[in-house]
Length: 244
Image 1: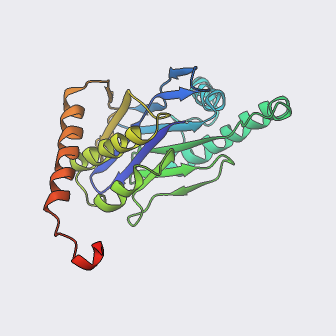
Image 2: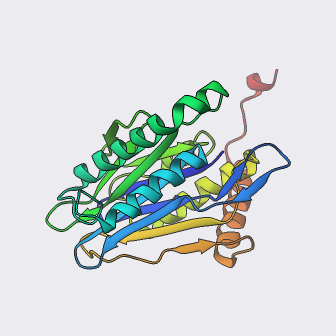
């Protein structure tokens, strides 16, 4: 399993992905699920993946290979909408190529993607691509998407995040969302890949990998846990009829 979250906010974009994959309790490995494409000063496009690892890796490999050709690729499409369509078309191509022998073996080849970024001349965009290759776009009312094991981290995002949330605060929110997910589900795990993009900078950030024991991550997760306990104690006592 995996967990990825992406946010399209007034000040820019935030992407965080875990890196754990498993095929049973005795086969757990680390694979990157956050990928960058871009040309400094012109565009940044970020992909996050969940689902069948072979499918998602094949899609990313094809997209990288096509950067060398003359056809449509992530370095020459004119809009983020066109970028999302290209990823969806590539996903369908990979699944159609691999589906027949795999389906006979009962293997689920489906994979989901988050595609976000900015191309010069337009606003930052964020899309959620379904396994069928179609997609929806994030809005001011719904500024974030999740794929993978989303249920444990979703309540924190729903309560704390809105379109105008500052990037640094949104990043903290995302990391706490991951801490809650990791605590509740062993199929999501460290390290985490983080990328923060400031609107209109048109830079291609290197991003940051949060390893086990990272001092900042351990600090905020510890404070979050202790403050939750403190707030629980400080909440008003339940009326007597609750306890009868």
